[in-house]
Image: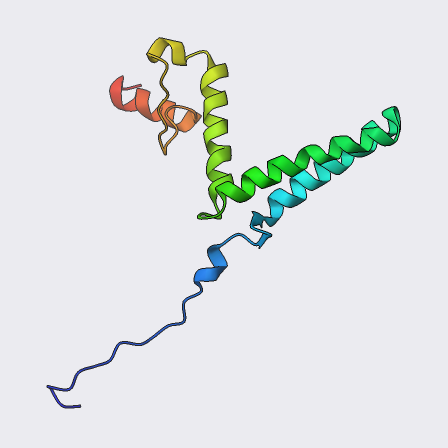
Length: 129
C-alpha cells in the first residue's frame, strides 16, 4: 500500500426501520390491539346487559383511533410520548408533595436514597458510623 493511497471506509448496512413501531392504517399496531380489544370487551359486556344497542359502545374506539392516527402522522412514537406525559401529570397530581415545591416535580435518572445501600453509604461518609 502506498502512503498517498486513500483508504475507503467500510460501509455497513443500516437497519433504521427496526426502531419504528409497526403501524396499521397509520396507527401503531399495539395501540390498535389494546384499544380494539378493550372496545370489543366493553361492547360485549354492554351487549350482554343492554341488548343489541349495547354493541354500539364499542364504537367509542373509532374517535380514539382517529385521534391517535392524527398525532402519529409525523412520529410513530407519539403515543409513547403522550402516555409518559399523562403518567407524570397524574403522578404530580396524586403525589401530594408537588404542592410544597410550587407545583413542580423533578425527574432525575438516579434514585436518591431509595436503596438501603445508598443510605448506609451516605451515613458512613458523612457521619462516620
